[in-house]
Structure formats: structure tokens, C-alpha cells
Length: 84
Image 1 (cartoon, rainbow, N blue to C red):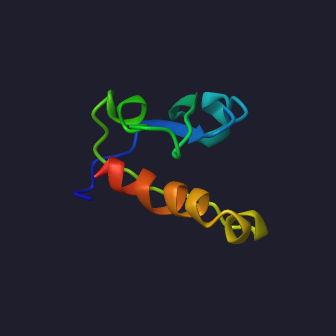
Image 2 (image 1 turned 90 degrees about the horizontal axis):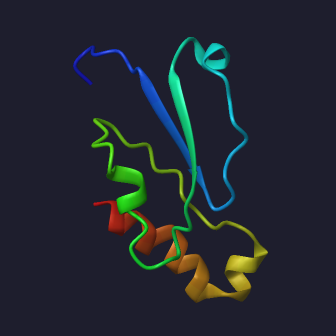
């Protein structure tokens, strides 16, 4: 980044993350959202605020992804591709 401080953070997961207070992370404005990266077109819920930076840690890494390859592929690749 160009040295611009991060002032807002959105945490997203298939189950809404536990709400955090601003004091928890040094005064950041924090929002939480439930979004299923395997759903059709999950990106709008994540980019409506026009973020400057996205860290995408979306992944489906468990023995379930080995048993259900399509679901693992959908979450780990297709959801990330939708963000692009």
C-alpha cells in the first residue's frame, strides 16, 4: 500500500463472525457479514463499500473438501475468482 492507514475492516465468513469492538483492533471501524463464497455471485456483498484492499483467505480445507471436491473447488477457487 501507499502508507494510507487502514481505518475500516470487514470480516466475512459463511457464519457471521463474532462482533468485535473498535477498541479490540486499535480503533478500526469493524463490520461483520455472513457470505457464502460457494453461493452464486458472493462478491457484491463484499465490495459494495469499494474497499482499497482485500485479503482473501477463503478456503475449504478439510477432509470434507476431499469428499466433496466440487464444493471445495467452488469455495476455494470460484469464490475467489468472483472477487476479481
